[in-house]
Amino acid sequence: MYVIGLQELNSRLSSFLIDLAFSDPWTILFTNSLAPLGYVKITSIRMQGVLLLVFVKCSHLPYIRDLETNYTRTGLFGYWGNKGGVAVRLSVYGHLICLLNCHLPAHIENTSQRLDSFERILELQQFTGSRAQTILEHDLVFWFGDLNFRIADHGLHFIRETISKKCYHLLWDKDQLNRAKKTEPMLNGFLEGELRFTPTYKFNLASTEYDMSGKKRKPAWTDRILWRLKKCPEAGGSEPPTSDPKKAISVILNTYDSQMQYGISDHKPVVGNFSLEFEKLIAQPLVELQPVGEWRPGHDATISYRTLEEYPSSTWDWIGLFKVGFRCHTDYVTYLWVKDDELMVNDDVYQVYLNGEEVPSSGGEFVLCYYSSNMETIVGVSCPFQVKFFHDQCSLDPKNQGFVHGLREIIQEQG
Image (cartoon, rainbow, N blue to C red; front, side, top):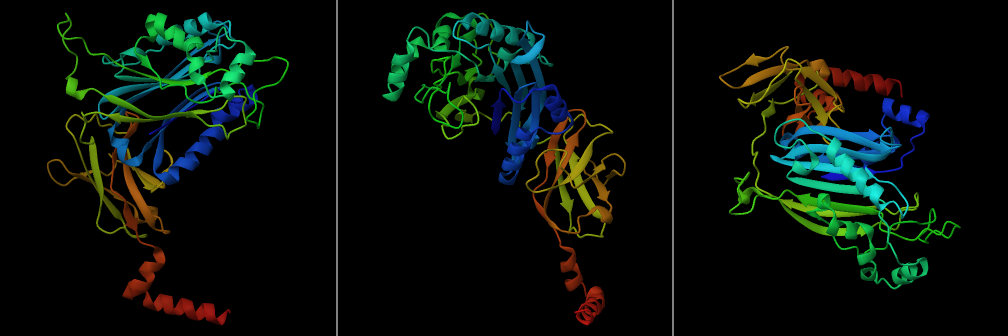
C-alpha cells in the first residue's frame, strides 16, 4: 500500500473549485506514477489544502472493504479547513485500519492549541458500523502530517549546532510531541520511530539550508508519522477479550527518514516504510470472476462469476474491463451492468455477455473487476488475460486470407 498525506495545497477558491471538478495535479502525478507499478487508487479525501490518497496493489482489491472517509475543520474555530484532519477508514483482510492526515496549528507557543485540535478531531470524526465508530477504536491507527510541534527551551544557535553535528538525541527531550506523549492520555499508545534525521522545518525553497530570514524560525521535526495498536484487555480484567491474541496485528517500522532532495516547500517530506503482519480474517473474495474462452475483437465475450452467500448484491452492480495497470475504478475500457443480461448456468455460477463491438480491437492484457454499488468498492478481480490483436486474427483466420491479400495489392498499387 501507498498512503500519501499532503498539506498546504493551493487552496485558493478558483484552484480548489477546479480541483473538485477535475483531479488535482498532485493526485494525477501520484496516480500516473504508481499505476504502471500495479497500484490502484482506492480512495481519496481533500479538505482545502489537506489531501489524503490511498493506493493498493491490484491483487489486494477484493480484500479491502468498509471504505469510509471523513474530515474535521479546526481553523477559525472550526469554520475553516486550512487546519484540521482528513481520515480514511478501511478493512484490510478483516482488520480495521484508520489513516489520519493532520495539519495542526503553527508556532512554538501553541502546543496546547495543537493538542486541543487533535482532541477535537478524535471526538468529531465518527464512522458507521459497530466495530469502530471512533478513530481510536480501530485495530490500527496511523497518524501523520504537518503536526507542527516544535523544539522548546533550546535556542536557535544550540539547535543548529546540534543538527550540524547530527547529535539529534540531544533534542529529543525538548521535542513538544515527545513531551506530550508522556502527559496526555489521548496520546497513550502512540508509537514513533527515533528521530534520526534532520529536522524537516524550516528551509529555504529549493535548498537544504535552513531559513535565514528575519523570522529566525528554529528548526523542528514538524512532520511526523506515528501509529497506535488497539490494546486487548489484560488477562484477569473484567472485560472479556474482544479478539483472539493470535489475530492481532504486528507493526514493523523498516525505515523512517526525511527526503532532503525535494525543495518545493519550506518543509522536507517524511517517509515511513512499514510491514504489517496479521492473520487473514478474510481469505476469499466476495465475488470470483473470470473470462470464458478466448477473447477476440468483433466476437461476443463471456464472463463467468460466482458470489458468496453473504454478498449484498445490487441491480447497480457492474463488471468493468480494465487494462492491466489501470489507475482507479473509473478507469475502465468498457463495462456492463451485471443484472441486465445475467444468466444462471448452475446453482451458484452466473454468466454475462459483452458485445463483440465492445472488445478492444487494439488487444493487450486486461483484467475484469466486479464493482459493488452497495459497498462502493471493487469486490472481485480476475486473473490477467489476453485479448488478441485484430491483425493477428486476420493473418491466422483462413476466412480472412483473401481480404489480407487484396489489401496488400491496394497498398502496393498506391505506393
